[in-house]
Length: 624
Image (cartoon, rainbow, N blue to C red; front, side, top):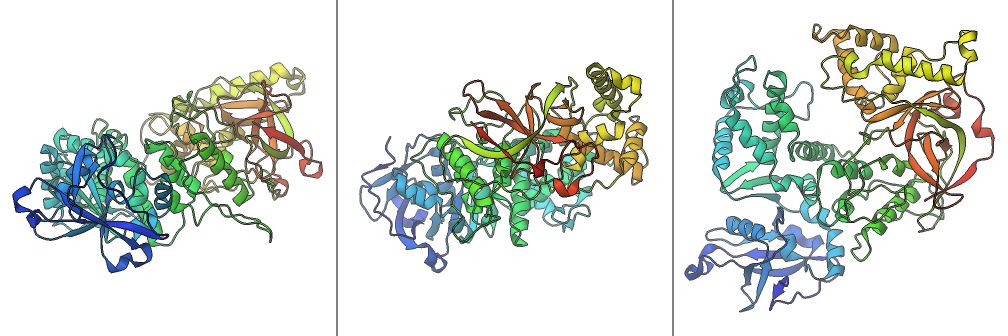
């Protein structure tokens, strides 16, 4: 069905948006079941004179089979989705008009040019609204349970979390009683927690567009049927419940909450809202990465376009000269998904004069998305089924690495699928070690998860098989500290990149882990927690040996014979593979950690370096 019947949108003037007047129930007493509205244009710069609410909701089905009447134009209607129709019915006031901005009605959905223009204004539309109104759906039995919890908890003042000042905790004892959890963590009642689990799995929490809408709004109100809840209450409720169930013998309730669709997006939205209040700028590509993991978009171009409101202050050129300028990312629904992703990669490279975009290229299962085969150096933002865990260099986590030193990437103006880079081959993959690393965080005993001694034996056997004379010379080739540092990627998975413990301390903590919890708040206890958290970076990856008998950690897609390169503009060593399709060209396999090669010319901490690569002419590689 067409997006409108008998109603024709008038073109907007430059800088304008439309607002919607929603008429009250009493506007036509004889037809309470009919929704009536009007649309009018207004310059975005003047919306402060007409306070409005901006609706945030999940479209649901694409079938627009409900009709909204245009009051000022007799007989003319606009069709909308059932989800939006239900939201408008609930938002309609009894005897007063309501001013709203709703994408499905305020943007001519059949006008691609207008849609592209308005997408670029979404941040300002939600930022200047009186509030963002989140529609979660119609009332059901779960709504009553959550309403009861809100009424009882709202009278008890919350307290700030000691461990995380950005989080406010609700009354522990009262909440324990509400969910039927004893102080020892036993006898939990599944009813209220089942409700929260279903609540966090509602469609709104997975929609890509809601992130920007909820982050930039000055105030967020969540409406579920007749129930209206402040966004902050929901965040505090979920965080407190998670903290309570994580500390008790709850049968895994904290894991169930964490695995819901809404847990990660809710926390991410909250933290980003706090950062904006503190005027902190979040990196655009990091936002896309986290969205890629947790949010969904029906149009795969929207994995980028839904976040354009955060593009402006980021991705700036680091070494801008007088003849260069930043390139913007703008919504363009006339190009393919493949071209959209390639264009973003080119803009990121051009604006930063770096190859930081390669950080987001990670192995995934064979894509079932509509994205045609991408160049190997372009991230697929629509695919989230990762086969090697997190990136070697975790997005958003500070690090000290600078493998290329001060050598920048020199971008060109090409829009081709071939990326020209410069660098130096420092070694090749000699052997990929078949040793799996499951998730360390929930492992009962670290030694059973990591199996460091077993890994060391495999490495030593491989080294001896490739250099028979090493045993005769009695040369120690690898020690446990080097292996552990490699598995930790020198602390890159931690918010503190300096590694707050020595390798000897970490090895002692590793060896003392017998499954029995040590006394809390001791240094050994904290070191074991650090290991559990930081060793997560090795999950799904492989340790490898180079042709120079050096150890590294990379993606499990590496193969023997792959080249290890220091590439200008890349903070991490890169794994390249000769293309079997195009002679003289290479595929980008991924980043890797290579012990001793992470800090460029000025950070030479490894006496085993074979040559000063920065003193030689770089080689040109063409990535396809």
